[in-house]
Image (cartoon, rainbow, N blue to C red; front, side, top):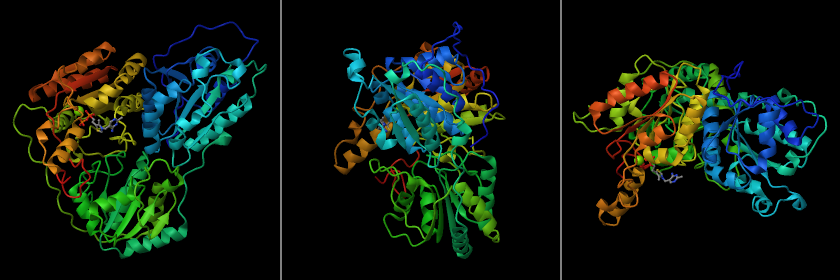
Amino acid sequence: MKPKEAVLPPLNAEAPVPGPAQAELWGSDAIAQCLRAMDIPYLALNPGASYRGLHDSLVNHLGNASPQMLLCLHEESAVAIAHGYAKASGRMMGAVVHSNVGLMHATMAVFNAWCDRVPLLLLGATGPWDAARRRPWIDWIHTASDQGALVRDYTKWDNQPGSVPAAVEALLRGAQIAQTAPHGPVYVNLDAALQEAKIGALPAPPQAARHAPPGPAQPAPADVARAAALLAQAANPVILFGRMSRDVDDWQRRVQLAEKLQARVITDLKTGACFPTDHAQHAAPPGNFMAAGACATLREADVVLLLDWVDPGGAFKQALEGAPVSAKVIHVSVDSHLHRGWSMDSGSLPPADVFMLCDPDAAVAALLDAVSARPQRAWPTPPALPPLPDDDVVSIRGIADTLAAASQGMEICIARLTLGWNGAYRHFHHPLDYLGSDGGGGVGAGPGNTVGIALALRDSGRLTVGIIGDGDFLMGNTAVWTAVHYGIPLLLIVCNNHSFFNDELHQERVARARERPPENKWIGQRMADPEIDIAQMARSMGAEGIGPVKQARDLRAAIEQGLEHVRQGKVCVIDACVAPGYDTNMSGAAASSHKR
Ligand SMILES: Cc1ncc(C[n+]2csc(CCOP(=O)(O)OP(=O)(O)O)c2C)c(N)n1
Ligand SMILES: [Mg+2]
């Protein structure tokens, strides 16, 4: 976690007019005061009467600052923005959603944050729990007897406090749980009647610093010694870096450990950058599924160091195609603390000869001290990508190359990557060069995650660029309005293949397996007739819209112009009409993308 900024960056705030001095105070004033004491910087929200008390307190009691509201046009984008912000900043923000219906909209994004192990303080509300105080009809349809059950299977904790002191305790406890690894969302449901009750004097603000989350779990020295002994004997050690920190010192320690051990390294596109992808020991381009070269490397390993890898058992299943794991395995993760039993997102169970239940970067630091340097080995040069065909077709690879050329000398954060991205298209050299995927595979998170990341990086000098699919954009695009409204600069490059193309590939595989016509794969997938004007959609929300770009020769000017808009503090969306097709493994097969 990074230290918090000294002052909140000034966004285009919606400033309330000051009201008269108030004798009367309300339950929600105490709750708002607690959120300020907890240093929650922003609350992304969509409004609703169930929390009109809290809404009033945030505006008229706190003056819409610390926390500042960020109005969102859909609850899914409110949560996705909070998700992205935490990924880039290491700081938790909040989201507020209306009684049951708002929470229902939010669920997809809560699941994404859960699977991505990202902290989130989600606030909601219920119509008065005291039935005698409910307004007819609306308070009845917006009151549920166990609202938290909607998200309980993919939140770490939820609570419906029965009094103002209990609400303060719930917020403090929830924030502590959310920010204790494995991180995740928590849900606090605030009764409308409790928010709107008169309370007399405000309680003293809570001492939030005394309810801080614990520091990272450290490895047991005996486990470090056992792991170091295994690594010392290894002929072919391999390290899989999964969910690692955004800290630059941690990054350097990872490089030092890999070099000291002369181990090969595998990284993942589902998680943020954590190792230089053009390092000689980096085995193969990262992907959503492991590339053939990564699978081959894992097959040859005799000792494997798994550092909080997403689906650790699945890595072996993919590489070994179901054969038993003969390598010794050192498994480092606290993820087994997250077990609800509903979602299977923990992945397949790996064998472990040493199981270190601790922070993966703490394990790296300890192992770095415990292992001795080994003689330098020669590493094969990775195969270069074939040259781009000299035609005028817009491709994802063409976008990657053009962005690289147009952004020379600029610091860029790639907030998201589209599904067809091949990890060889661009190298990562810093923890903020790339921030990983949505966690839960919920299409529609891309725009919101990108806005949250851009919010966190707003004053960093790094430009935020999200490279996303058209399906992803069309499901989550209204986050663009929030970015424009509050002045959060970013560039979205939409790889528009006019299709939910990933699923065309699935239909093709099924058709081939059943000896049916694969040319029907587009039916029920293609977004054509009419084609949607994505640049026009962006313009309708106040963003700069460029495109549709249909010829490769127009890409350079479009991306240069897009980057310039972002440097001027604007939001820009480029509609890049890419030819359908992937040159990366999106099937999970061991050797090639065409196997299944
Ligand atoms: C909420 C949700 N609905 C459906 C899916 C199934 N799905 C997986 S990938 C995908 C297509 C995404 O389209 P796009 O973002 O345009 O990327 P493309 O597949 O075209 O590369 C779909 C529909 C999903 N993962 N999440
Ligand atoms: Mg698409």
